Amino acid sequence: TPVIKKVMPIPKAHYGGRHTVTLLPGAGIGPELMAIVKEVFSYAGVPVDFEDIDIDPNADNNDDLNYAITSIRRNGVALKGNIETRSREVEVLSRNVALRNELDLYVNVLHCVSYPGVNSRQKDIDIVIVRQNTEGEYAMLEHESVDGVVESMKIITRSNSERLARYAFEYAKRNGRKKVTTVHKANIMKLSDGLFLETSKQVAKEYPDITHSDMIIDNTCMQLVSNPHQFDVILTTNLYGSIVSNVVCGLLGGAGLLSGKNFGDHYTVFEPGTRNTGAKIAGKNIANPIAMLNAAVDMLRHLGHRHHATIIQNAINKTINAGVHTRDLGGSATSREVVDSIMKHIKIAVN
Ligand code: ATP
Image (cartoon, rainbow, N blue to C red):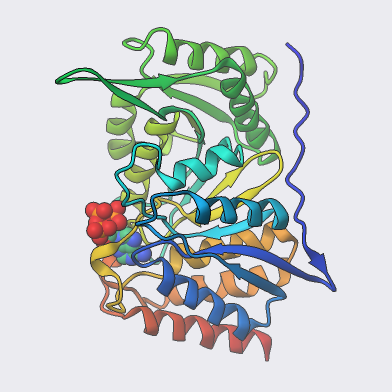
């Protein structure tokens, strides 16, 4: 098998030690969380400037989206909330999916680590989910062939399956992980998931030091709930990845905690791990700001701003350990109180 050399995304827009990154607030709680990120960054003196781009959810064209894509191509890096697509025009597809496809962000990585200070259903979890991010069940190729009969295509390609599998094994190797589990439904979708599974088995042969196994998606959900500690790195298709991510986030404390990373060979997009809009909780000062702040910290690490990343990360951890929790974590703190606590710990660290 030819070895595809992985080119790491290169952060651009580096001027006088500062970086410019594209900011896509999206809908629901996105804008209020981005305002918090900006406030925390400015308070901590982070050398990052934002290029804000709002995408009109009602637009019947993709002008805003194309502008956002051009901006990310220029800056190399983006921080993103969940974008809404209200238009029912068939040619206006989900903008979140379109953005990932256009930028060829073929990997989504969700590192699910327990916070000791959060009262969660399972303790001491440390699972990495490596999810295909540009094809599979999200191909958005649907049509009504005859009245009352809809066909939806799931696309699996060897090339995308192979570079994803290689990413997962390389990740495991780099990070001292011992085991990769391919999650699939190849017993039913013999050709599509069969190709995904077979490709991962081929790639696994190049990594004899890492144990490779596979598991059906249904059983994986059950095993994750009952015995999650058996998992190390999970390698899976797009939709199964979304489901498994939500299950693990649920076990760890919900949608408001973890961040996710979208990688391609050239661009990187950071966002909350479970990609929620949170429309019902928007504007109420109750959304948990941690997931978006963690995404912002991931972005700082990626850009090489390790010092600022560590200061903010420590302030987040101290806030969680001190029990300053929003409602989703069983607490009663407002978003504001969580942010104030984080800023207090930043102040202590920098003085
Ligand atoms: P809506 O977007 O209308 O609130 P939904 O069912 O589409 O409803 P999602 O946005 O997918 O919900 O979010 C799933 C759940 O997680 C919701 O209950 C939402 O309130 C909650 N949630 C998402 N993000 C956060 C957050 N940052 N803090 C607290 N709760 C959150």
